[in-house]
Image 1 (spheres, rainbow, N blue to C red):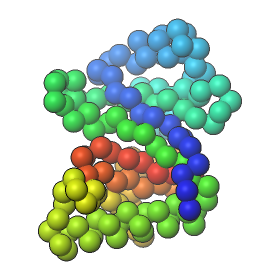
Image 2: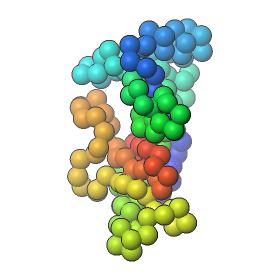
Image 3: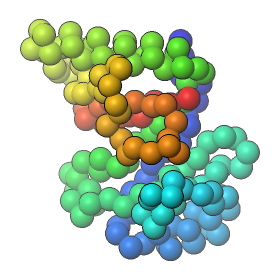
Image 4: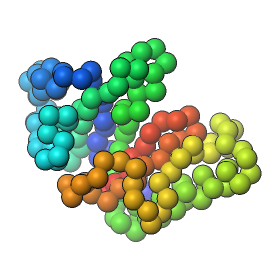
Length: 150
């Protein structure tokens, strides 16, 4: 089992500013724009980082995400795993850690107990659609959202 790299990072921008994201990430940084899922056109911008297979995703955040202390729920890394078995094994491992902390009532920083994890065998808590690969989400002990995919 092991994480093979970063699949993508997701960054958030204020509503109505995808044009600015395309200008900055596409034209200024030179990343290559790519198609987004049909159901989310106009709400996302995706860019390839050269031919690395890694991507930068841009999505709209909520107003409170941009305030000091905002949780920025849309900001997250997406870790890439080598295969479906590895993905399922990692999800089961994170889920077991989550349940252990829940049972012991010890969801704290010392134990690093995840705040949440999508339950194995159930749907993922992200956007749904045929364009999305097999994936799951979790929140680490500090509330950072993490995505895991192939």
